[in-house]
Amino acid sequence: MVEFPNNLKPFFVDNEDLVRLGSIDDGGYVVPTQTIKTSNVLISFGVNDNWEFEKDFLKKSSAKLFAYDHTIDKNFWLSKFKKDLVKFIQLKIFKPKKLYKMFQYLDFIIFFKMKKNNEFHLKKIGKCQNCLCLNDIILNHLQDEKKLFLKIDIEGSEYDILEDIILNKSKIQGIVIEFHEVSKNINKIIDFTKKINTDLYLVHIHANNYSMKESSQFPEAIELTYSKKNLHLDIKSNDKAYPLKNLDYPNSKRSPDIKISFNK
Image (cartoon, rainbow, N blue to C red; front, side, top):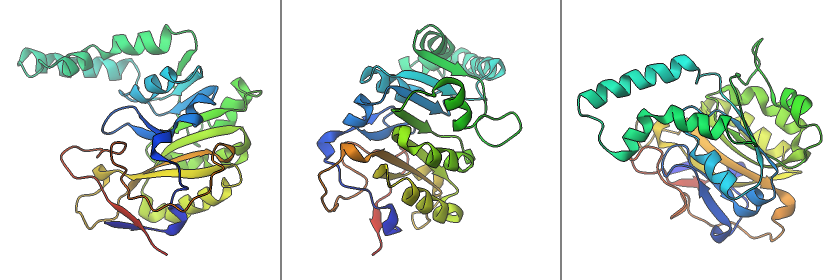
């Protein structure tokens, strides 16, 4: 059992009103159904080789997709294919899922390049010279949009865009965000949660067990979901046990999921 500050205890949302999007393990997130349905733009920061979340989101929404990831260039796909080909020749690839991974670039092209409402940008998100931030994207593409959903998994650069999120919180319908290096940034996470609370509730928390080497260790990566306040008017005390049964699953299947409690 890991104890978190009470400031990060989620607002109550009935489990029947929540859905898991994306992979059953790492890359999946729990989101309120209404938040998905009422969003008209999905902005995804950090795709890598898993866009199951984006696929599931768009099955339940008519949103446009803007995805950003600077790591999956031609060299990424070529290197990946070479490694998979060697494994295939060595007869290490024979399951359908692994065969799909071998030719995953074709799915990437179909999903991001050939679908009318989907856009992919080979850009880094953050504060570097050639980086983009949320403000850049809104100013260039989305000035008139007011129901944005953000999916953020950018390996530590999330802290670079928190002020942009706060500045644009009135336009945001929901957020899933993975925070990294949590122990040294816990006050930043709490402060961010407080500052967006005028518009967005924290509605879900899950600890990433990849970030723990020992069961007594504090997790260094946590997944948080925020949702527009006007979608959640039924105020109840939250006595749920986290992780949530049939919604949360361990990021690494080799280790048990992390139980969470909250201090007073």
